[in-house]
Amino acid sequence: MKSAIVISAEVKKALEQHKPVVALESTIISHGMPYPKNVETALEVEELIRAKGAVPATIAIISGEIRVGLSKEDIEFLGKSKEIEKVTRRDLPYVVAKKKHGATTVAGTMICANLAGISVFATGGIGGVHRGAEVTMDVSADLEELAKTNVAVVCSGAKSILDIGLTREYLETNGVPVIGFETSELPAFYTRASPHTVDYRMDHTEEIARFMQTKWNLGLNGGVVVANPIPEHAALSEAYISQIIEQALEEAKVHQIQGKDVTPYLLDRLKTLTDGKSLEANIELVKHNAKVAARLAVHYQAESIDKKTVTNVY
Image 1: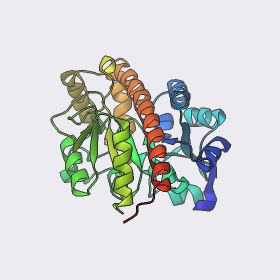
Image 2: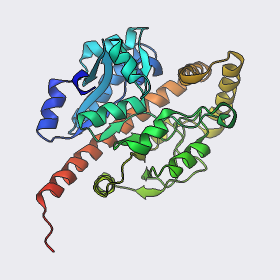
Image 3: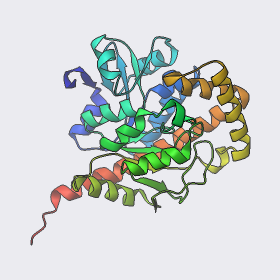
């Protein structure tokens, strides 16, 4: 699969010079937002990361090539085309072998970022255990990837459309640490808090970078969830969004929406039912996560260089 990876000149130079890089997913462009908001947001997020001293690496598959770092033309194509597959671990070999176009999910992005040597990834929210999973067994591949791939994922918690309690339990069972950035409560995507706590609260990205370095140096493979609440001015009230989510879930059942079509369907319905408020909240939290991820990447790179230059003498 490594031969199928094409790294952009900007990202390649940053990796060779040991500069901080932040991976970005592409399903948010192809399946998460309508055009042209999707393209505008993707380009703005990249600039926010550059402004914080890191290099953005948006990841997607174009004509069977895993591209780490996209051109503006690539992003425009992903935002407009209706022939973009959602790509998780299961789908990667198929889309690459068939030379198709694909947008990477959280799991797909983690895999490609890890192959390219990128340790920090910013997204909106992770997938998780879907409501009713005790019957449907619908559990996102994101959770399994977090259990085994060494990438820190800066997000606003799990998407509100999920069963956040069961998602939290699944992460705990698989030994995935959940760090709350400036919070002790697990954010729930559109809202800043939920009834669930994080494992550890950390108020500085330097602390999180040290945690990541320590975890992986100990040989404890697997990702880290960095839960970063949506900015207060953009958050929706829990009562308001919960009622709308319930309505959207009922509609999904009626229309027999299943599998990987569930999340895009629900996000689109929420946008309609909230008169666009959910989309604006989504955009704001993605931008906020990108800025925190850039700071984390800067400190993680500094931590990695420090570790290489220090020799312990016993």
